[in-house]
Length: 387
Picture (cartoon, rainbow, N blue to C red):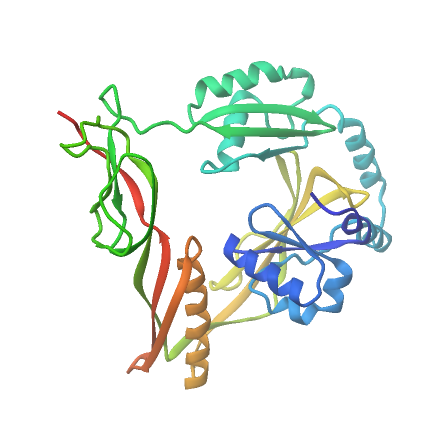
């Protein structure tokens, strides 16, 4: 949910490549005194005022920053700089008339393992998508149709708020498929490790804390010991282990870089709901090596309300590839940055205990290797057959 002061005075969106990078960037911004909040899985919202005051610091973060600010005041400033034509006024009037009658946005919440796009595709199959008139929809029948067709969705609720369809889902956690009437399994090790903690909720523990285990070794058994007199079961529990692993990053001495020339506008189209029309388009490029960049400019009413209208600007930017030889300091810097990202991704689901890094210059560049120890969950289900 966007903060009210952001909506009024304006804000920018930072797009991060992953939730790990988003968390790190958010911490950096907060330590720098920049007001920020999160939106979705990989987006950070910052106020326009903080962005303008700290533009140099924010631009160094590992995120892509939207070129245009959002919000009421930026929208007013933008409108004052543009010519307001009769056509644009008619479009705004028409959109205001259509707003209560059609779906302009579908927002999904509650997803864990399935994606929001998967749920939106399921809804589109059942008849709920952007541009669908509300009067044609029976939400109860659509919910039933989705549940009947998609077994991995256990519960779904669709409700209307203005022109937005809000969808809440809960996933169905199904047991693994098995021909037997009862499903039996062990918990086995996902990799070589030293056991640091084990909690058994069902089954029979086979290992102890401090024990060294190999990948695939049984940690919690679904088969009872012969002397216990118990019955086979679906073993369950949490097992944590200390895992040693190695990460290597190699940076070549010769780097191929692109040098971009002046770009030109090669196309402009307008998209309304699911329909798109070219206003103008230049076909063919004067150079073979060029990038096609598309900038999607979303239209908003009063800088706050999303409407299903956007202008798509297309640019052709020529480039040439040049080779650059990196010095030793640059090689180490690039290797260190990539190693930092690799360690963050590897330890995203665990706790880093120790790290030992070494580096060597090779004939082709620089090789950096880090030995890390991570404590993480090391157990997974493995089905078994009981005679």
